[in-house]
Amino acid sequence: MFNALRHCPEPGRYVMYGAEFSYYSAKLRSYLRRKGLPYAERRATIRAYHRLIVRRTGVRYIPVLLTPDNEVWQETSDIIDKLEARHPEPALLPAAPLARIVAMLLELIGDEWLLIIALYRRWRDYPQQRNFIDGEFGGMLLPWAPGFVQRRIGRRIGARFSGFLPTLGITPETTAAVDAWYGELLQQLERHFTAHDFLLGARPSIGDCGWMGPFYAHLYRDPVSGAELRARAPAVASWIERAMSANHTVMASGDWPAVLPGALPAILQRIAGEFGPVLAANETALAAWLREQGTGEFIEVPRRLGTHRFTLGGSAAQRAVLPHGLWKWQRVRDAWRALGTDQRSAAAPALAAVEWLTPLEAPATVRLERIHNRVHARLIRP
Picture 1 (cartoon, rainbow, N blue to C red):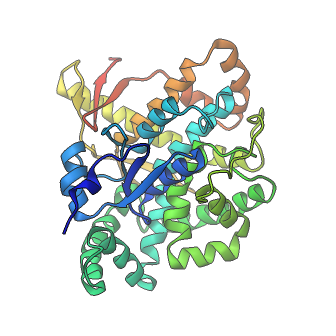
Picture 2: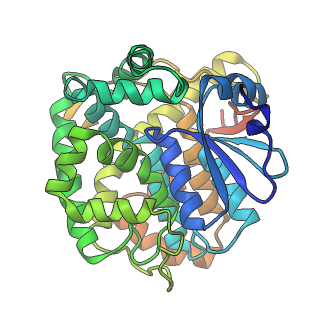
């Protein structure tokens, strides 16, 4: 019989509801492990959805974190901010200005931009790993059901996720560009992790955790892409294993880097040229929508607001305007503006070199807030 106590807080430890194959669950799991926080993990079963997740958060997204004092937190970036405030050591959000902003940029990129590679590879390779993927989806919701039932349910759920590809701009016009970008990124990361343990050098940060969504949950665990990654980029596979290790002592000490190490500058610069315009286009579209609403108050915004044109590797296509990502981008810009003048001056040359300084300093036209786990926005510039 179902034990309702499984959805009650546990004294002295957090409880994460997620799934091994889940993009954002991998991010939070990596963070909790690198932080060394006591936690248990529970599957986001259909019962957990109805009796805890939807009931307590009002939304249907995982992971969620049940705290020892019976709060339920949703949205991994928000969860990480709260946990860093409660448990400042060992820090995964750097105090050093350059490292702090870059770690937050990397987290944003992992959450919002590398999703293109991860989803494309999962569903491109689906015919070769169909039983695995279907079983993962169905096994999360119905772990007590027979395998054939899990796969049948999983196939129906997976179809919703595969249908999300055009929303991200993954179309026949861009698939070759996605393949080429992934190949380039793997080569860059392989060189980087031959010399460095983590993205920012010797110490893990929230940037590494954010990249576990695409790299662990999809590219490492899925059978086809996982075999390819291990063969082509063994140093990248070792980094993933370090970032996901259950041994929380996999935390190097030392100062955060004063300069961006290894292949990081080239990686950030490439992404700035393609993701930066997407962020700007999303903000422009959201501001136009807010003007149409004719109110200066915070109002809930749809998860999609039409489409905009973007370019990836020289290939142009349409993708959806996704306002939720702007809340995460605002978080990075707020952190930049919160730095002292001398701190910004010291970090600015490195950020300018990778083409992120101008987007960081551009005046914002909208302000976003998460209210009851939903994104709300208001216009702040005419």
